[in-house]
Length: 451
Image (cartoon, rainbow, N blue to C red; front, side, top):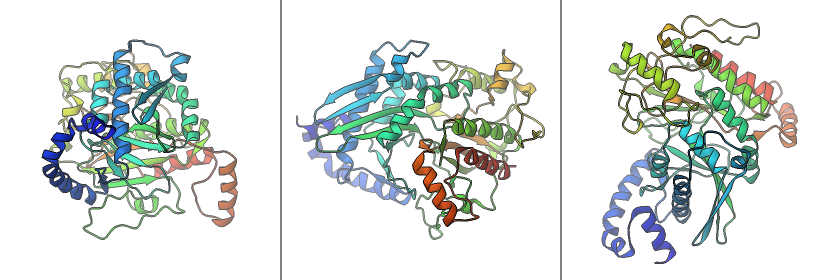
């Protein structure tokens, strides 16, 4: 079997002979799906797409890389220096796949309640990858798994090197604050294909998952210069990610969860400030709640289930394995529509610096054995919902919130850019400022745009 046939059999279990028999039927089906996804701003990477050979190789290479993890002894409870510097090289016909710090990301995926089997299914399923084209100035390519659960984003060698440098601090941040809003990066790889430039890419969980009913998406940086996206004509179904100026006049209504959110924004932005980075974004998505989703269910059984989920269950990176809690809904089949509660109550009290101090946890989580640890880690009651770490419910809307793009270091180039923009946009707010100002400004945006 040649390389093309091999790739097809890996991705869809189709031989060349089977392909010729079912090609016409599949093409009609794929064409219908493609037209539907095009309306949403997503493009199927089919046989005519320039990235089809690349994504076929990515699927095969990632499947083998994950299988290597499954076959190895992954029961270790502590990460070592060798784990952080590990590099797995796997040769394939026509390309070479490399996996960086594989044991670390495997450990992190387990802590998020993501099994290797489920991860492999998403990345190597027979369904076609999708290409996402945004209005971002980034030259990166964005691929989305067919279930829309994971993004594959190309990165420069410098960005990947920086990520691997700060990886230990990144993991430690999640150990200290398991419910962090930072994007969940679950893999780093490179692929070298014949006569193609070596490509580095990261794999990250999509903040906007599941996205079926999301009606608005925003990329927020806390400034105004070049922060407007011209909306498509009314009635258009083109997927758009709007910016700061488009958001003006809106607020994020979190009610009781506002205090938790602002505290976590403070923790996460200060962490990024310590890394000396800027230009990261706060993603915000809106989804209308159904009437039955607005009814809070505060039964004792419900509170116990959600408390256990928040402390030991999926999305709680303090344990290596997701705890099985009777009564919880499995992530892949979650249909629970309860309101997402919070452990905080009352009106936020501000420090002299204008930020919210840590407060005691509410009585509804008194079943937790180590209350002080939960308080220090700024945990909240997680919903029985897919992607619980990025989902919060307000009185009328469900919000998808996360911080992405954390690789831009405030080095010489950015300092020079700051000087130039200071002269060009005198008196205006632009993105390229010092990490300390960037951190304070994004926190301030969150504070003034939430109720």
